Image 1 (tube, protein in one colour):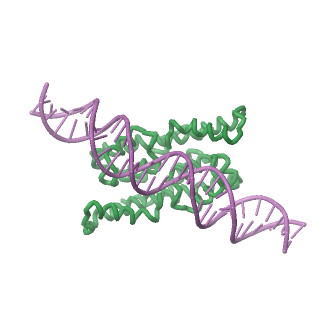
Image 2 (spheres, helix red, strand yellow):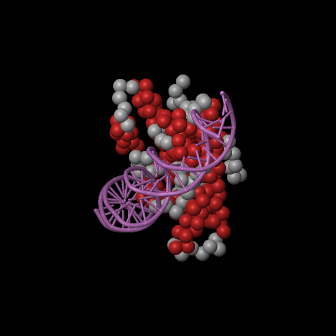
Image 3 (cartoon, helix red, strand yellow):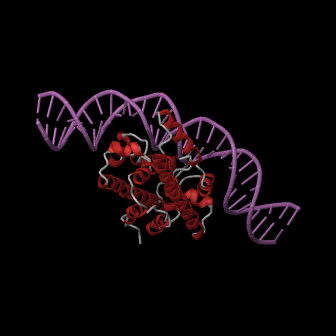
Length: 114
Length: 114
DNA sequence: TTTAAATATGTCAGTATTGACATACAGCCC
DNA sequence: GGGCTGTATGTCAATACTGACATATTTAAA
């Protein structure tokens, strides 16, 4: 995802496509959606750490369960931008989180506009 | 994600790592987690289509909103294995789904073991 | 049927994400 | 101090995903 690089990449693309950056409407819209996604990532990440700790798994344990590596787990929990949503959710599942827990992670994402 | 290719890829990796495939425990575990992920993808995908239709957006409209392409949207909705969870969730957000809708997609994923 | 709009499918070069590895750092016990 | 367990950070070759494009197919309306 590269959260950090995303904004500028998006900007570049828009400018390349001949965008007049006076159009605040679309821009606010964009950053709004971006914010939703980032918030979602954050709550899933925190759910992973919580679930892992709860079940007394080390990062190595979890890595083995999902055939990944300790360093990847560390990056997941650190919110590293090189980590995809896919991997976060896989970690959450592999850590033993139940559907209910996953759902709760989304629920805590309570900044729905309006 | 390549859902279709995933199983065999995983199998290869395990065998390469010197796995005795007599260990059904870990195998069932794996496919169970895989099933959870696939179910999650499916319910998110159906939420995308539902949300898009509800707001009377064509695939082209949605593609423009998220700076993607019509063909990508089609692939998302067709459950194409080349589509990441990230992209599915972005489409869901871009289609105007509220946090509550996203949450509902997870809730409908009701096949939590035990 | 003809036309048009929407959707589906295949391909590919560019980019993002991956596990693995090395290595560093932190806390804890002796 | 050293040893030990767990976590963090950086790198990189291999793989996965991406938007864009061409093109086909479906759907709907006349």
